[in-house]
Image (cartoon, helix red, strand yellow):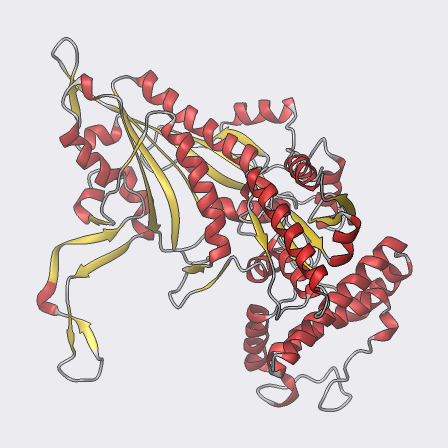
Length: 570
């Protein structure tokens, strides 16, 4: 079962505890399926890398053609059948676009992918394109013509951003990650540098994560609140380590009004007369704002513990960004608690680390290592930072959630005290903890493959997609029988609590539908046509775990779907 959680060795756990720092470790598993997939993703060798590293193992084209030809000759009957099915689906998609009047620019990337699939099946069927501009391939030209130069590089970059071709993991893991996000419809670049547009499919994933985690947080008597996005610069200055840690990432608001440039040359400009006395910081995190508020809310020991969580966006000005993993603006939750004792705060910070680990393992089926950050890697102003590190299938380790024991630093910085049972004033102890949309990046890299996104059933926005195969136009009896069976099947699946989508679009061919939902990672596709109804069956095709389609009785389809998805999650 490809989504089975990885298990960590006792030696690794001991090393984590002794080092008290996040360790970038090689992914390993008791599941041979996960282990083989991880090894295959990096050409059979394990690699250790920080998350900002990228790989480029691109081979010369001649070598690629030779390896493709060799691989084609070694294809099994099942692999050939799968390639033939992909070729047919891609051809159907191209024909559907042409029938709808799509221009050549829209069709060209699909044709390239079709040719790539055909080359895998029969390398001799696809001839390499001849280069324009003569036979002297070694001659390098500057500027225009056949030499390419900067313009060609720019065009290649645009092609990558718009193509629906998925770069293989073994070729370039970073490009593969970007192409999964693009082709699954999770996010896209925005006009604002370093920020992304989260598309509906990506936002649906975050909504499911947020709903699950919100319930976990509230089970610990934490209440949701919301605090301003703008923080006075003077607040950050009150906690020395905190300001040092975030100073280079802060976006600053210095004026409260715009005005027209008197010279007319610059359009709108910041009004010189509207400069703020105390500039405002767009929140990189909310400790300072929330602890300033805690000072008003906490008076007596009866007010403690005080546990607050907020769901919000934050801004940290990043120089190098990557969707979901590191962007200038991102979505997250941040919890902040105040306690009367050291033990209360310390236990709370460890408890939330465990909740994050459970979320990753139980909902997202992501294996994690629990650990403690080294002093140089702690959150700015914290005494301890607990972390979960998610292991990616190529051997990367990704920080996926942190919980900070703040000690009394923020309480003292903002003069937050309480009167204890003996009537003495005491400083409070604090914690903060959070996870962000980076979890979606971990989800993508842990489970997906070269065909697209792969989603564990519990987090999939659509767990089952049903694709009805239309009856013949004049066969009213078959149409009625199909509609009844479709309605009964859909109702039965929904009654079991499954998220179901019926894709009855009559302007999209079935092959294109299969292709689309596979790329979006839907765990189970059910095909239902007039012949299936007549035979009392439907056809199951799982996104992962099982390669072949299977025929399932309509009477048993609901229970079979529930059981199959449970097995896939585990």
